[in-house]
Amino acid sequence: MQGWTAEGLHAMRARLIADVSGLDPVDDREARSIEEVLHGLRTLPQPLDIDADPTHVTGSAIVLSARGVVLLKHKRLGIWLQPGGHVDPGEDPAAAAVREATEETGLVVDHPAGGPTLVHVDAHDGGRGHRHLDLRYLVQAAPDDPDPPPEESQDVAWFGWDAAIDRADEGLRGALLGLRSVQGPPNT
Image 1 (cartoon, helix red, strand yellow):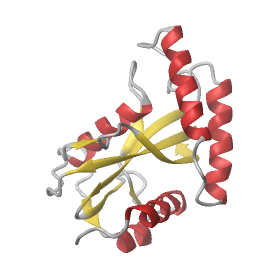
Image 2 (cartoon, one colour; image 1 turned 90 degrees about the vertical axis):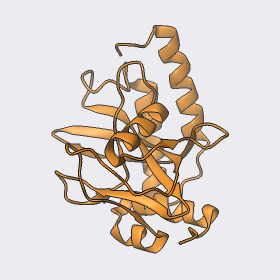
Image 3 (cartoon, one colour; image 1 turned 30 degrees about the vertical axis):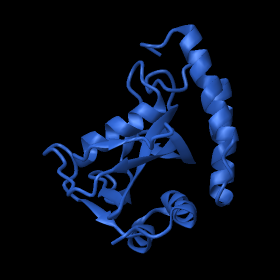
């Protein structure tokens, strides 16, 4: 991938394999996704490069605050999702998750103090013939109102756990159920 040296790509790939291998799947879908993501990380020559292969790693963010979980209604798909997207050249999936969450919600977000925390993976069709191996990171934000830029979906909102889980697709639902069990209820 443009922006990665061979050594850097090797180190990043090894770190991602270790992180994904360390996940305890919340359901059968995530267990299958873990296997598919690990296979992709081990076999794809350029696992982050959207132009190198229709199957590629993406990064997304489960954004939490005292107000709950941020979801956005995807403009093309019409479903409520977590912010996320493709990895830019020289970026890793954790950085892509923060960048995409900031771009799509207008919120200032960051990883927890301990650094990037991979909390879930989901392998799914990404549209246009693509297969996304989505790495989902926990990120934090102040409980501010979302302020997405005009080119992004304007349907961005904070939801409590139950409301977010009710709106989520199958893959995101598993992530939210797993996080709720360890994070507890939001303050509002």
